[in-house]
Image (tube, rainbow, N blue to C red; front, side, top):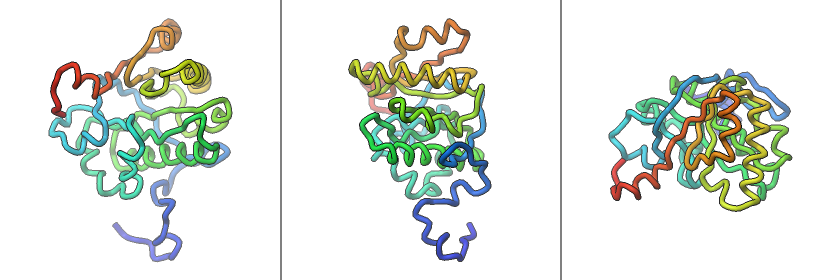
Length: 222
């Protein structure tokens, strides 16, 4: 890979090269992702994907951020391994209601930047969508194409009444804004949250929580 000799590029801690040639959209200039019609039936978390020999599955990032920060710091080190899988659900750096808004915006940008870069390098990507409270609605859907398959996760997001309220509210806003062709949900898929959209004709595709599946099987293989 040719390295630009301009000093700002050589020390590009914000990794502007990830979004070279991207189309930027929204108030904060997020790179726009391509849409997808993929319908995965299983996915493995990124940290386990680095060790498995089973490539006939997707990779997701619905796990603690520190387990995939390495992808942000050194994307090229993981590209070939991710290219070997059927596809990737774009990274899921956290956007919590309790986080400062600036951090929510930055993490949303990082989600889009890595998703765009993976698509540019031939990886099939389903856009991941996440939100916090109402403040995030002004940016959290930017860069996600309309009428595409999108992915969300209830993992850790509906544990209490407060979290469940904001997940349901954000999901409705997402459907109204993006009009997705299908919704892929990782982990529990409660009827009270997803059934209304299924009745509207939006396919809801469930991806089991990988760790819960392992516990039920009593095995630790990828």
